[in-house]
Amino acid sequence: MPYTGIRIRLAFVVVLLMSGCTNFRNEGAMGVRSSISQQGIPASRFGALYYNPTDLIDGAGDVRPGVGVIESGEHFSISLLSAYICGFRESKGLDVLIPGDDSNPPQQKGSGCREGGREPEAADRTTRGEVAIIVNTGEGIRNAFNPSAEENTGRVIYYNEDVRESGQLINARNIPIYGPQKYNGDSVTFDLWMLELDNEENAEVSELLSSLSSMGQTAYPPSAPALKVLNTLGSAFLSGNHDDLQARINMRFDTLPPRDSQVFRLPLREGYYAFVREENRDLNPEWTTFQVNEQLGELCEVKAGQRCDASDQSTYRGQTWFLIRIAKESAVSALKFETQETIAAFTNRMATFKAQEYKKTSALLQALDTNLDALVCKSTEVKDKAGSIDQVKTQAKRSELELDCDGTESQ
Image 1 (cartoon, rainbow, N blue to C red):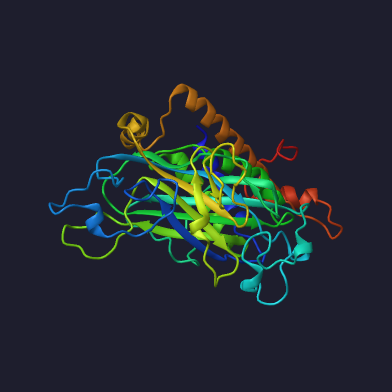
Image 2: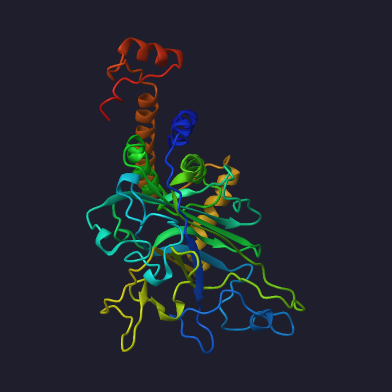
């Protein structure tokens, strides 16, 4: 697998990715709730996020049956079931938000993508944008809670150059984020960022982002070299595009409490977790009207007399949202990931895949390698005052860097 070639180019690409210069940061406020099957609350309804320790463990310190808590030694996975994106800003010239404090639109106008901070006539259904979703999750101590920290890492799991600003479901479902993986009982951190990219500034990296998204949607064991490459590129991309942030959530799941603990906890539990973005930061999402459509894997808005099932048309389209599923998994389903980690540690941390997976992953890495070649060569072009490429100076610059760009210009 072409890891060496990719690493040689990382230094050049990191500089390119970190050169973002847009200035439309507007994260909004992110509401979070969980939908967990427990006594008195249907699985599809949203309830509390934090729980009393006595609801989770009994007097002997054992986990109560049926509460969905993931215990040390069990296996679990995290997936992005679906997401709805809307209300981002493609560029200042196409900004549809009303003047004034754009982060705090009038409450009487609501806070959804159809109304929140928008004039009714401004809901232009033709405006498109480039959207990337980046995630980072894992077990143990992590440092990802500082919004300005450039060491924030993550991999691109979704990228699309044609997302409608007035709102749409993303064209992907059930994207693996983590695992299946054995749980060792430590705290688990979950980070998610959504960025809207400027078309002109990011034209050079669109092909790279497509490759990163394709690779990012593959589940990797935490020690796989491919994951490290993806995290390196995702980190550089995220650091260089802080001003493009349109949504962000950083959260940590607690370890199981001791028997005598009295404070509420956010445990790692099997269930659905909805993240709903509010444009109006003084308002909270209407959680009593939301429900998980378990048959479609979507967030739905249930009104009087309606049901939320596969035949319903009640998918919630009022705000940007992300629906995450945390699920218990069998040891068998996690075996290949755990085996890869063991083998990787034994063979200098080289990834091992079954023949079918190797072929697919190798092809993606080859595509990524090709895009990196093209980006490196593109970044070393020297242009004259008329905007034409100065072949002599360009070749001299590439020779100084020992770059061979023959054949990459057309890719």
